[in-house]
Structure formats: structure tokens, C-alpha cells
Length: 61
Image (tube, rainbow, N blue to C red; front, side, top):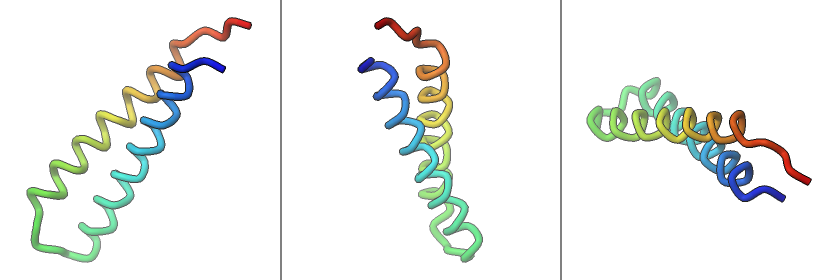
């Protein structure tokens, strides 16, 4: 089992959760917009870095 691939998967899942949370709170018209902006940006960073790790890691058996 490749550690980079597992870490990339975890980052991708965390990014998806953060983006869903941000979207849910924005739809509910909550008032703490700065918090959602920060969570959304961190979610995007996690998502794209996780996808990059999974995509660029070679399988070595």
C-alpha cells in the first residue's frame, strides 16, 4: 500500500467535505462569510493537492 496514494485520498475526501460544508452554509444564507471563504479555500487546496498526489504517484509492487 502506497502512503502517498492513501494520503492523497484522505486529502481529497477532506477537501470534498469542506467544499460541501461551505456550499451548504452559503445556501442557508449564514452570516459568517469570512469563515466560509477560509474553509472553502482550504477545501480547494486540499482537494487539488490530493488529486495531484493520487494522479502523480506511480504504483510499485
